[in-house]
Every structure is written in structure tokens, then in C-alpha cells.
Amino acid sequence: MTLEIDQIPTNILKFIKKQNIDSLRPSQLKSIKKGLFKNNKNQIISTPTGSGKTLVAELAMLDTIFNKNKKVIYIVPLKALASEKYKDFITSYGEDLKVRIAIGEVQNEKYNYDYDILIVTAEKLDSLIRHDKTFIENLGLLIVDEIHLLNDEKRGPTLEILLTIFKTRYKKVRIIGLSATIGNAKELSAWLNADLIEDDWRPVELQHYVYLGDKLLRYK
Ligand SMILES: Nc1ncnc2c1ncn2[C@@H]1O[C@H](COP(=O)(O)OP(=O)(O)OP(=O)(O)O)[C@@H](O)[C@H]1O
Ligand SMILES: [Mg+2]
Image (tube, rainbow, N blue to C red; front, side, top):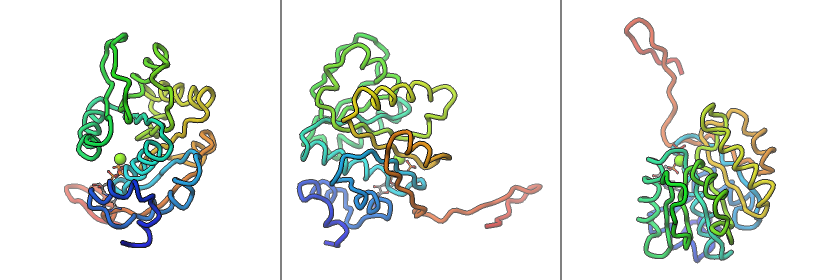
């Protein structure tokens, strides 16, 4: 067992080991050092694609559920991604946790709110909190995957309103935002009163090319 992984609370560690993870990536370690398990501060994880942002979210989720006895909502930008995340989380946690998904179009659809982890789109969560507040009782953590979509012309406003509602009305709910492509990470972190975790480690080297005539030339 490496020292790094030692920093994960033991009751969570077994889930992580099941995923064959035996050491942490730089951004994951930075997030823990900033207080992932020690404080309840919001965090923005702004690191390259494939660098392991989901694990930071999962660590916070497991800590919220097992050590704080609270629930988690995970926002994804698209329904297709919601189904994908749902499958992933069922595989990793389905035996031990109540993992649910809410993405349907129907306004008054009754959901099973007896969840530990609820996966939603921003649009769905926006409609849910307007119709029935009971399902966010005892909510401890809101994960916002691809949080840079705040900037998206079409989908951004819903997410922005949603986060504003949480910022003002549900202040105790911790927000963790994940993105590989935030242009204004500092500004966003300040707006969310979040610690910013930045790192440029990536699983594969980034190569820069230009397309010239019919040739692709590498320049960096
Ligand atoms: N500490 C680790 N050790 C080994 N593998 C890891 C570790 N952390 C994450 N991974 C693996 O790395 C892969 C990519 O991670 P992940 O999907 O979280 O990337 P991401 O940062 O969310 O990227 P994107 O911005 O593209 O969504 C996953 O298969 C994950 O299991
Ligand atoms: Mg991701």
C-alpha cells in the first residue's frame, strides 16, 4: 500500500481497490491535500481529459455517504452520459448503495427518492427541485461533471440558475465541479467559493499538428 493511498479513509479504500487503483494521480492527491476529506469546501477540478477527475468525485461521494450519512446528486450534461454513468456506478457500487437515475421528460413522474446517488441532467434537476423538494433533504454533495458547460449558449443558463439556487438556498451542500476545459477556472472558482485544483498531468502526451495541403505536420 502506497503512502498516497493511505490518505483515503479506510472504509472507502475497499471500493477504490476493487477498481484496481493502487496509487493516486497528481490532481487526486492535490484535491485530498486541499481537504477533500477534511473540510466541506467546494472544489473545482480543472485537469486534462483522462486524468482521473471521476475518482475525485467518487471519493467525495463515498465520504459523503459513509462518513457524513448524506446523499449525493451527480449532474451530467446529456442523457446518454447519464445512462453511461449509471451503468458505471451500478457496476462499482450497485451492491452496496442505492444508485438511481432521473432523466425522463415527464414532469410529474414519481421517482424513487430513496437514493444514495442520484444521476440527473441539469434540466431534470431544475424541474425536480421546483416540483418536489423532499428529494433533496439530507443532500450533502452535488457533483457537476463538465462544469464548463455553464458557458454553453443553450444549456449554460439552466445550470447557472441551478448552481445559483444551491449557492444561495442550499449553502450546506458541497459542490464539486469537474472539467477538462475551463477557460476561466479562477473566476468560476471564485464565483462558487471553491478551492481550485489544477494540474497538467495527462495519460497520453498532447501532440500539436497543423494540416497543410494534404499533409499533417507535427509542430509540438
Ligand atoms: N489513480 C488512478 N490509477 C489508475 N487509473 C486511474 C486512476 N484514476 C483514474 N483512473 C482511470 O483513468 C481513466 C480516466 O479517468 P476519468 O474518466 O476520471 O478522466 P476524466 O478526468 O474525467 O476525463 P474527461 O475530462 O475526459 O472526462 C479511467 O479509466 C479511470 O479508471
Ligand atoms: Mg470525466
